[in-house]
Length: 85
Length: 283
Image (cartoon, rainbow over all chains, first blue to last red):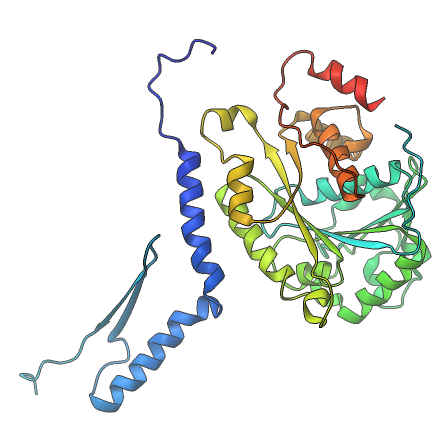
């Protein structure tokens, strides 16, 4: 209304802020155990696997991707190939 | 509207915590403005600084040179409550309980805080607890005994996230949450640093955006205003300073706190003529 409409309209960052918050908070509210959940999970997984095979303490890698519709939990376990001694 | 009529809240005083999680969103400004507003409306009000070690409420209230004893002295039995309370020189219904600038948060104990609050309940209608930032001991004790909470929030992602966290704590780590059968704390959002022009440009989340995310009632909308810094420079609560968009917004919020139904206003942009209207209505 002040005649600045010649400038290209920038993306509406407020909407981005709202979307990001909604996704994040949905997860934070449901995750009762909070930030300790993933380290504990990592420790438990490591313990279970070690019962069956010999792996390194740092061999378990856990990644979480929190999405709107669904989230994914990616667990990567490295262990020595059978070819090695 | 006559403002000196005291409502029948003499039998039950209310403890209201002003909290936010995030720092710098306007907790102390709001605590000062709300408590001065309540006192202006005739309610006996005390405002307590829970930010042990980082005392600032005294400066915002303009009584920093009158602090002798503090909240911690009272908790530890080194001073009586009457000695530590500072009576505001401008409003006879208003008192300030400053905190210690030298001690740390461990000096606060749940029992000590409860004892002081119970003693204050006998004399005051409203007890306003100005919480420190964060969610640790000081913040948790500031909210623990509260009947109501004002969650100060800026329309900005980190502030909204922290407010959500604080709302979770209000519903789990407070006396009302722990007591079976007790009414939960009545929590409301006070949106501060609201900038209508940036919202119009899509650069800032709207009131509805924030409320949709936090899902609690709105106590008020305080526009970004030069009056806030000016008032803190001078040690005058915004609601006691010259009329401004911010002071009008705080007075509306105060009226809602006392149970009045007042329509939420959004037309805070600084068009010429606005101040004239504000002068007219706050007289």
